[in-house]
Amino acid sequence: MRKKIAAANWKMNLSWKEGKELISQLIELSPTIPTAHQVIIAVPFPYLELAAQLVAAQPGYFISAQNCYHKAAGAYTGEVAASMLASVGIKYCIVGHSERREYQQETPEQLAAKLQLCFTHAITPIFCCGEPLSVREGGNPSEYVRSQLVDSLSCLASEQIAQLIIAYEPIWAIGTGKTASPEQAQEMHLAIRNYLTESYGSAIAQGIPILYGGSVKGSNATAIFANPDIDGGLVGGASLNAVEFATIIGALPQ
Image (cartoon, rainbow, N blue to C red):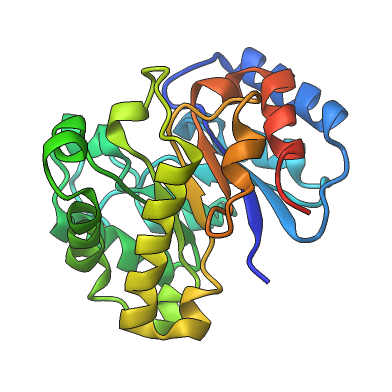
């Protein structure tokens, strides 16, 4: 059975005092996480070890990095290696978020290298894919997303793919207040799972959690998560409010 996941992406927000209060409030609101569920919180680099300490005794809660560098080590001032994340006990890392693809011009080759480095250090990547508004309105969004998967995942072995988490994030719905309809989201999630089935077989495809990311809120999470190929959400702005994110956690299918 696939894990159902509520993943928070704080992005570049909150002081550590605010972040600590947010995690503490969240645990108070959602103290018990079913074994089939996971809560993953992607915090800024300075908070990783401190946040991990806060959730260490809380079953079902995990801390993730928001990124890692595509090189193993070296003279790359300001970057963070996957090995460094592993050395402080981090088990998850977001790879290929649309904001990094846009603002840092990350390439498919760099993302493929990040994935390999994550797996080398026993870190589960949360691989992001999704189309811009121009493709949604005038192109072929399924083919666009499929090309993102092919370009960055084709270097991975089947046993690595089986450990992956994928997050579909329509770029036009990130931070805009717009949300893909449950039907649109399910259609793309099914297309992604069909690609995985064609490439790696049904057993692997059916085991990979695929999350929806794009203005997920407490008010729409239940309708989105009810779809058979949607296994939870990668949540941005709404994850900065403990009550809102707890509602999203509670919307995960049992």
